[in-house]
Length: 331
Ligand code: A2P
Image (tube, rainbow, N blue to C red; front, side, top):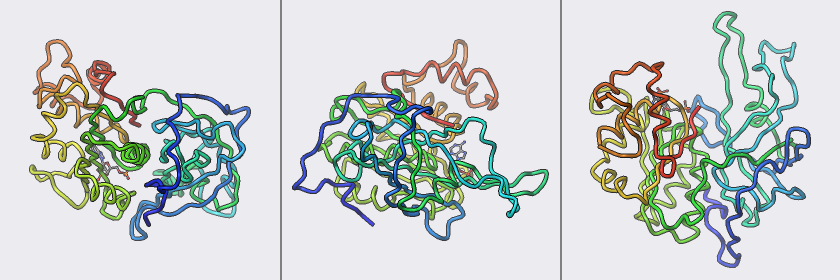
């Protein structure tokens, strides 16, 4: 379903991108946002249940004020640890859960009166008891029906934004799973403003049934040859070494185009999703000689490739990145 929220109808003006504002609503005074609609964005055959949920901001201070790359908090309410069912919810020590905003700052209505979230139901089993464990906030959001109210806080975050002059840069976006959320809004914002530079989106998911917003991204890729949309389907495709096809393998596959692009000082690199991606992307950046990250003293590229996951050097590498050009949100 390609809706009018990805391409502005000709008769509406394009509102300006707002300045960055944070914490308009705090946990003590959350805003009750009404659920307008939701639709599943993983295919029905997928074992991953992800939903795109659109909330109304009508009557709130957040109208026209949030920026893509920010997050909002959701206060989960409802039925927890219900004795009727053989399941428990994850503990609610800190009641607020943060979710990346998936909609452009203009929302679905081009007035900033809606905000959208991309949420995957967290469903696991307790390894010792075999009990089903449901993520409290993610299931609360995915269960919500149009008309329900949801308490939200924020917006928060200043470090994963597009620059204030977004049309003057090239972009390389890397995502895994629901880490795709901010890139949907970013792509919508860029192309609706007439973006003419280069943008790559490299997106990793387990199965082809999990490619969230595939229709939306293909829509833009078909119209804009400067949008390079690439997927890495880890459990269906293999990298040249016979291992799982991950985002970093696709970056390597396309490095003839990416090396000259990343050498440009006006190319920005964004990474959003699983932390594990970092252990593949940093070594690749070293291998191609990128100065987006610096090698820790005395280490070689070969040393980095041998580093165990818990090595303290990863923190040094992460901190060494060029913060003007390399943005990340991993978990
Ligand atoms: P896999 O789980 O097959 O190992 P989701 O969040 O929906 O599970 O998707 C996350 C995607 O990121 C999956 O395709 C997952 O692959 C992949 N992934 C897992 N670990 C890494 C890693 N270290 N580097 C890059 N991608 C990863």
